[in-house]
Image (cartoon, rainbow over all chains, first blue to last red):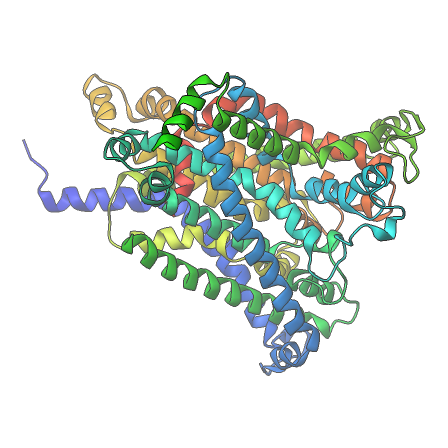
Length: 296
Length: 283
């Protein structure tokens, strides 16, 4: 009888891990990385099929000298940052509200989760119907004699500060972050808070020094996803935003679908810039927050 | 001192607790905020004449609903193709994501962090940045403007969620049960089928729900890769809202959210557990 040596055991284990990971990794490398690489090649004006044999940075020059691009970047950053911060704070509040057992908790939790299943597009339409100047809210306020004309209702859609877009993201992301926070809260239980209470911590101290540090990693992970999504989303800023300056994804799609074929490398360059910007911001954010989580 | 005492006495005398009143107020506001955008959506779908500043329409009819279900609108066809794509994407994600989640949740190995980052990258880099390049490749492969092409690109945003959720579930999974099954004579397939799958089923359900909903809601990826030929529901809905036909937009919007709510009704109890959703919080 032959016993397997520790080495071959280890080798078999590694082979097994590799086999388990191969389908997922190859899908992501082929599709995701392949798409990124292809976009990069095309952004360099390199397209031998139509006689473009000399790669150059012309498309990037065009992107960076475009005045709309910078306005666009600032707008997109503002949308992503503001929505993420407000949604995260409100989501923690919502999770704390929904945490204890109370009558009707099941039904209210269901509504909370239901919102998670709504596509962003439907949310954008709902926000449009609710907050436009002749929308549902404006009608209610007119009947309550608060305003007398649609134009007196503040412009929340197609407005400079992208308030409608941010409202939509807040609406959609509170349940997303909230469900994750609730899951974390459920897993840590209430023991730590009970200990803090028995040691004389008041409600605020218990939250600040016990609950918050426990849920912070979950909140941060969820907010990274939210930030990345809101930075790269197309349909919400398209539906609820101004056309100038448009959000970066709207700008990229606009030049990609331009009839002028020469605009395509520029669209590809913009896609690359979006990818790099999103990655840089997320990495910076993760670095900052990791330091915070460690220190507290 | 006297004031503190009286405050405590006051609290004891009150028939209800102010804290709990505030909580209920907060919960009521949250609930109102969650459903508010859906109220005008529903009213528009049955509104016949709804002019400013009427809070409710002057009259109602079912034109939008009749139109939405008529062959002319093509909504039923879109409903079918959207469901088909989302189901195939979900099944493929399970096939690919469960093994990957097992490797990440159960084992420690060199380069794990890099593999995790690679699998996570689609949640960080917007799909729009990738989709334009993929479009170029798909045109050359002849799968642009096809359902197959759309299914493949929907896998990109869906797979990370499936894998993350499964990694979270497998982190709490005890593989010794498998060894016991094997020692009792179960083959590898029987072990997977009778031991592993039932144990990690809550994760498969939650991950599957996320993946289904992500595919279901895709707009720009479908538009670019499908070239407008693959008319999923979000594309239809987008056309109607752009043409400002609000009643039909309302009806289609409700048709668009109904399946998700239905799926949630069936899977809601799995969504509250740490084991499944917690995986996403572990990035």
